[in-house]
Figure 1 (tube, one colour):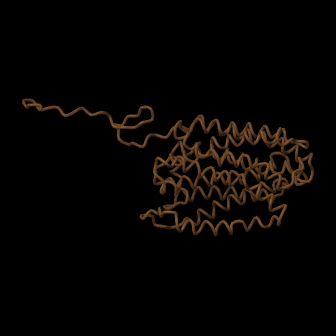
Figure 2 (figure 1 turned 60 degrees about the horizontal axis):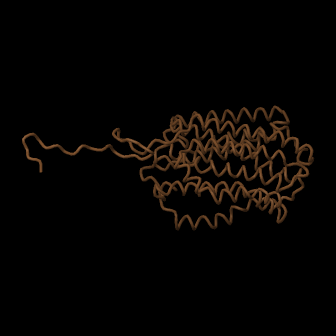
Figure 3 (figure 1 turned 180 degrees about the vertical axis):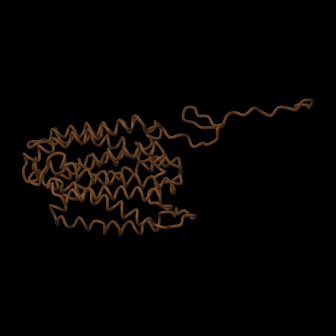
Length: 367
């Protein structure tokens, strides 16, 4: 939609704003969830989509321009969608129940992996796949999606566990814990658009390397949060560093994904990247308690949860560092939008070469 609605000169800022609001959506969840838990009850969380839909549907109908491809056949890849969703569901369930160690859980994990393999097989051979695998021939696109998996896996695990650490260990109410995480939201809202513009100016490699490292530092600073944690001294510095890292990387990440493929496939690229981010967060929330040794009893014991949290934050930081290494090694500035061999680039400005003025023919009189 951004590709279709905005002039190329405005897309960097538009992507930055869009990415900022996406980050806000993830960060504001604990705040809204805490208010619901302490107020009307947690079941109301499942009704949140109703008022949002009542706002979004008329706005979209009135203000979003049509961008459909008139040559598209319009068929939907039902089999691919079912296999993809089934693979995620089965693997997630197996990770959540893995501590039981039962045969049924093992079979569920095997079935999930098999569904994932079948998804790849189907997508490779269908004429109209939901996720054309040839899009991953772009080294830049593949690298940025791997960075996305690392970054959003860490984010998913952090926001899930940090809100609980503040409640179970530090004694915050659900609403107070959600409110405590709002600095990341404020930073994303204020600076994401400028981050998108900066990414266009200097290229994506530096933001996608520095951003995850800042986020990793913020998560390690959360190790200071314990039973007697001070918000100003212990919690806030960690969230400010984390928020700066999110501001640095989120908008350039999205812009780089869309810039790594042909303009006609920008929507597909964005969709795949969003799916990667959501799947990474889902799997992280399912797997991180298992990796940190967090059993069901940990949620009722401050000591047990604090021990597991101190194992989980370094794991999130390691995943972020891996994302930074991938970005530094494989992400490059997108090629200039000029396919003619005679184009030259200097100082990030693309132009055709200077042409010699026409020469007079022999024997003619030059005027």
